[in-house]
Length: 130
Image 1: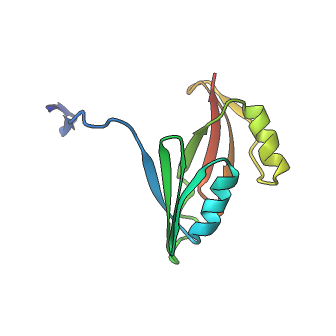
Image 2: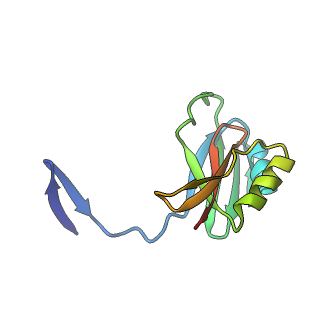
Protein backbone atom coordinates (compact mmCIF):
# COMPACT_ATOMS: atom_id res chain seq x y z
CA UNK A 1 0.00 0.00 0.00
CA UNK A 2 1.40 3.36 -1.00
CA UNK A 3 -0.02 6.88 -0.92
CA UNK A 4 1.02 10.28 -2.20
CA UNK A 5 -0.56 13.73 -2.60
CA UNK A 6 -1.91 15.08 -5.87
CA UNK A 7 -3.59 18.48 -5.75
CA UNK A 8 -4.63 17.97 -2.12
CA UNK A 9 -6.23 14.59 -2.90
CA UNK A 10 -4.76 11.45 -1.39
CA UNK A 11 -4.14 8.77 -4.01
CA UNK A 12 -3.90 5.28 -2.53
CA UNK A 13 -2.55 2.42 -4.61
CA UNK A 14 -3.66 -0.97 -3.37
CA UNK A 15 -2.30 -2.94 -6.34
CA UNK A 16 -5.01 -5.58 -5.92
CA UNK A 17 -6.59 -5.75 -9.39
CA UNK A 18 -5.68 -8.90 -11.30
CA UNK A 19 -8.05 -8.37 -14.28
CA UNK A 20 -11.41 -6.91 -15.24
CA UNK A 21 -13.63 -9.97 -15.42
CA UNK A 22 -17.11 -8.73 -16.21
CA UNK A 23 -19.85 -6.16 -15.92
CA UNK A 24 -23.47 -6.02 -14.82
CA UNK A 25 -25.85 -3.93 -16.90
CA UNK A 26 -29.50 -3.03 -16.37
CA UNK A 27 -31.75 -3.98 -19.29
CA UNK A 28 -35.44 -4.08 -20.17
CA UNK A 29 -35.46 -7.79 -21.04
CA UNK A 30 -32.53 -10.07 -20.11
CA UNK A 31 -33.60 -12.74 -22.62
CA UNK A 32 -33.61 -10.27 -25.52
CA UNK A 33 -30.18 -9.01 -24.45
CA UNK A 34 -28.78 -12.56 -24.11
CA UNK A 35 -30.08 -13.49 -27.56
CA UNK A 36 -28.60 -10.33 -29.10
CA UNK A 37 -25.16 -10.97 -27.58
CA UNK A 38 -25.35 -14.68 -28.43
CA UNK A 39 -25.81 -13.71 -32.08
CA UNK A 40 -22.58 -11.68 -31.79
CA UNK A 41 -20.71 -14.79 -30.62
CA UNK A 42 -21.09 -14.72 -26.83
CA UNK A 43 -22.05 -17.93 -25.01
CA UNK A 44 -25.21 -17.80 -22.88
CA UNK A 45 -24.33 -19.25 -19.47
CA UNK A 46 -27.51 -18.61 -17.48
CA UNK A 47 -31.16 -17.68 -17.99
CA UNK A 48 -33.46 -17.10 -15.04
CA UNK A 49 -36.46 -14.90 -14.39
CA UNK A 50 -35.20 -11.31 -14.66
CA UNK A 51 -31.58 -12.34 -15.21
CA UNK A 52 -29.32 -13.67 -17.98
CA UNK A 53 -25.56 -14.01 -18.30
CA UNK A 54 -23.22 -14.38 -21.28
CA UNK A 55 -19.48 -14.77 -21.65
CA UNK A 56 -16.70 -14.52 -24.20
CA UNK A 57 -13.54 -16.27 -23.12
CA UNK A 58 -13.02 -15.12 -19.53
CA UNK A 59 -15.16 -11.95 -19.74
CA UNK A 60 -18.82 -12.07 -18.61
CA UNK A 61 -21.81 -9.75 -18.84
CA UNK A 62 -24.80 -10.13 -16.51
CA UNK A 63 -28.12 -8.65 -17.64
CA UNK A 64 -30.52 -7.64 -14.83
CA UNK A 65 -34.10 -6.60 -15.57
CA UNK A 66 -35.35 -3.16 -14.62
CA UNK A 67 -38.54 -1.48 -15.75
CA UNK A 68 -37.04 1.89 -14.83
CA UNK A 69 -34.39 1.95 -17.55
CA UNK A 70 -34.12 5.45 -18.99
CA UNK A 71 -33.95 5.71 -22.77
CA UNK A 72 -31.03 8.16 -22.62
CA UNK A 73 -29.17 6.64 -19.67
CA UNK A 74 -26.67 4.70 -21.76
CA UNK A 75 -25.33 7.45 -24.02
CA UNK A 76 -21.90 7.49 -22.41
CA UNK A 77 -21.44 3.78 -21.76
CA UNK A 78 -19.34 1.75 -24.18
CA UNK A 79 -18.36 -1.92 -24.22
CA UNK A 80 -15.22 -2.61 -26.27
CA UNK A 81 -15.00 -5.94 -28.09
CA UNK A 82 -11.75 -7.01 -29.77
CA UNK A 83 -12.03 -8.52 -33.27
CA UNK A 84 -9.58 -9.82 -35.88
CA UNK A 85 -10.84 -7.80 -38.86
CA UNK A 86 -12.79 -4.54 -38.57
CA UNK A 87 -13.85 -4.37 -42.20
CA UNK A 88 -15.17 -7.95 -42.13
CA UNK A 89 -16.94 -7.26 -38.83
CA UNK A 90 -18.48 -4.10 -40.27
CA UNK A 91 -19.81 -6.01 -43.30
CA UNK A 92 -21.31 -8.77 -41.10
CA UNK A 93 -22.98 -6.23 -38.79
CA UNK A 94 -24.29 -4.31 -41.80
CA UNK A 95 -25.60 -7.52 -43.45
CA UNK A 96 -27.51 -8.29 -40.24
CA UNK A 97 -29.07 -4.80 -40.26
CA UNK A 98 -27.38 -3.73 -37.02
CA UNK A 99 -26.48 -0.28 -38.47
CA UNK A 100 -22.77 -0.10 -37.63
CA UNK A 101 -20.86 3.17 -37.87
CA UNK A 102 -18.39 3.42 -40.71
CA UNK A 103 -15.00 2.05 -39.54
CA UNK A 104 -12.65 4.77 -38.31
CA UNK A 105 -8.99 4.94 -37.35
CA UNK A 106 -8.15 6.60 -34.03
CA UNK A 107 -4.49 7.51 -34.06
CA UNK A 108 -4.41 8.49 -30.38
CA UNK A 109 -5.47 4.99 -29.28
CA UNK A 110 -4.04 3.02 -32.16
CA UNK A 111 -7.41 1.38 -32.79
CA UNK A 112 -9.65 0.99 -35.83
CA UNK A 113 -13.29 0.85 -34.68
CA UNK A 114 -16.91 0.38 -35.70
CA UNK A 115 -19.87 0.71 -33.33
CA UNK A 116 -23.47 -0.48 -32.90
CA UNK A 117 -26.07 -0.11 -30.13
CA UNK A 118 -27.62 -3.09 -28.36
CA UNK A 119 -31.41 -3.31 -27.71
CA UNK A 120 -31.05 -1.16 -24.55
CA UNK A 121 -28.86 1.52 -26.11
CA UNK A 122 -25.49 0.34 -24.78
CA UNK A 123 -22.75 1.11 -27.28
CA UNK A 124 -20.72 -1.86 -28.51
CA UNK A 125 -17.42 -0.82 -30.05
CA UNK A 126 -15.70 -3.48 -32.13
CA UNK A 127 -12.01 -2.70 -32.44
CA UNK A 128 -8.72 -3.91 -33.79
CA UNK A 129 -5.40 -2.58 -32.52
CA UNK A 130 -3.15 -1.42 -35.36
